Amino acid sequence: MSATPARRILAVVPVLALLVLSGCTAGPVVHARRITAYQPTPSASPFAPSTSPSATAKPTPGSLEWYLSQVPTFPEAPPPQPVPLPATGTAPFWHRLPTDQKVAFITIDDGGLARPSAVAEFIWRAHIPVTMFLNSPAAEEHPEYFRQIQVAGGVVENHTINHNSLAGRSYDYQKQEICGAADKLEAVFGKRATLFRPPFGEHDSTTLKAAHDCGAKAVFHWTETVHEGKVRFQTPEKVVQPGDVLLMHFRPALMDDLLAALKAIHRAGLTPALLEDYVL
Ligand SMILES: [Zn+2]
Image (cartoon, rainbow, N blue to C red; front, side, top):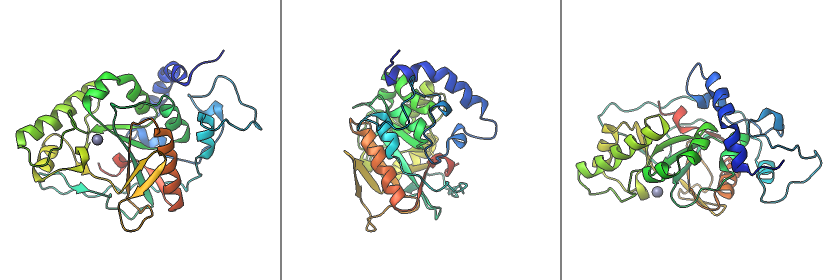
């Protein structure tokens, strides 16, 4: 019997949810999902394919098995050392996480434009830590899509309701955009967002105060963008640095963007990690 990846994911989510819940006794779910070297052992994954490919068969380029075969082997991620947060009544704004640990972070924004179907299974099977900064209407329209990624280890965070630039707007407007989205995302995903990314990265001091007042512990920009499989550096080093934050979007080439980000992080001698393990 054949099944599309989307159907397989839907079929295994209850099993996976049980596995994740039962393994979650000492902290966030994501602790059990820290990235390790990809092991091509279908039986170890709740997203296992219904048929076992032959050990010698080469995966078809563009297939999920092909993407999995391209994922580099990373050094073990170091135990996270959370960064100190200022107690100033406002959220810090960071382009890169202030850490010397050999880690970098993958973030995926928006959610309204495209939602490639293989992403959740790719994230689960390759152990890719991701933070999703979602606009709340996209999350409300497609909750199952993002819940599958959440179950696979991804974490949902806040990217406003309407994706308008916040810089220069009133406190009330900004608070409505940030708290309003936080409330809706919490209703859909059962967890309050603790990180915020302003649309276009545009912000002012009011944004950081409003984000703090809506529950955000930190506000993130980015250091690299990834689009259609290409990483573009926005820092002088032109190589991924410890603490760097890579930005991509829910767009048609998201599988290529994830792979390109993993390769760039690997080339730098770093390991992908989860932002939420560092901002507590
Ligand atoms: Zn955006």
